Amino acid sequence: MENPLVSICIPNYNYGRFIESAIKSAASQTYKNIEIIVVDNYSTDNSHQVIIELSKHINIKYFRNNSNIGMVPNFNKCKDLSVGEYLVFLSADDILLPDYIRRSLNLFLYENVGMVAAHCDGINNFGEIIIKSPFYKNSAIILGSEHSRIFLMTGVYFPSQVLIKRSLLNSVGGWNNRFPIFFDWNMWFKLAQVGDVGYIKDSLVLYREHEENASSRAILNMQMIFEKYLLKLDFFDSLQPQSILINSRNESIRKLAENCLSYSGSLIKQKNFLLAKKYIDIASVFDPEIINNEFYKMIDMCLNFENKDPSLIYEKIIPMFENFETKRPFDVPFNSIII
Image (cartoon, rainbow, N blue to C red; front, side, top):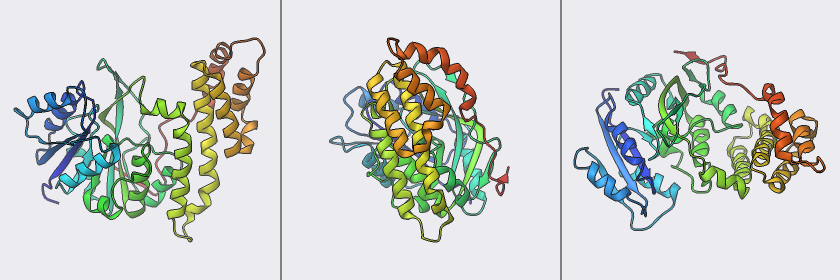
C-alpha cells in the first residue's frame, strides 16, 4: 500500500453551525493524500453559505441536492461521488483529530482488515470535550468472526470513527436504507462478515452529543427498539446455516430487554411514566426472565409506588444500581493481535 487516496465524505443536513469545524478537521489531517466530499441534503439553514465560503480556502468537492433525499441515500451518494480507495463518513457535526487518517490507515497493513475504528470522545455544543472510556483495553486486530459476536449485541461505533476499504463496502452493497437509524450498525456487521476489524483505543474522533437528537425522538416513538429487533432478525437471516453465530440468537434478542430497561429509566427521569411502563412491559416480552433482574424490580417498584412521584424515588435509589451496569473497557477477544 503506497500512499492511497482516502475520501473524507461529509454528508450534511442543517448543521451549518458545526460543519466548518468538521471540514477544517478533515483538511487538517497529517495524512495529505485525501479528498473532501461534501454533499448537502438540501439544508434549510446557512449550510450552503458556510460551505461556499470555506471552499474559497479549502479544496472541497461540494455537491448540493435539489431536494432532501433522506439520510441513508445521501450517505450512498457521498460514496458514489468519491473515488478514494478508503473512505470515512464524517458526520457534519463531528471532528476528526489530526492523526485519524494516518493511524487508521496503518492498520490496513494487516492482511484481511476491512474496517478500522478509532475510539472517540464526546464534545458538546459549547466545544467542551467529554472524555469517554474506550470500548477495548487494547488497540488490536480482531477477527471479523469474533467482532461479529459483539455486533450481534450492540453497534459500538459511529460512522465518523470508522475507516472503510472501498472494495469491501461495495461488496456488501453500500448503506442499507431499510434501517434509517441503525444503518451504520448494519454496515459494521456486514463488513465483519467479509473482513477483520482494526481497533485503536486512543481517541482520534470527537462525537457531538446533543440533548435533543434523532435517537431521543426514536425512543419516544419507540422506533428505536423495534428497528433494533428487525435489525437483529436480519443479521440472523443473513447467516449461513452452519455459522456458529446462530447459537447467539437468543442472547442477542434478550439484550433488547436490557435496552428497554435503560430507556424506561431515562423516561422516568423525564416524568414520562406511561411510556416508561410500556418499555418494561416490552422488556418482559423480549426476555421473560428479566422480571428477576434487580434493575427491573426497581423500575417496576418506582412506577407502581402509590401516591409518590416515580422520578423522585428513582433518583434516590438509582445510585445503588451502578454496579449492575457493564463497565468499559473490555478485553479484546483472546485470538486478537494486540498492537
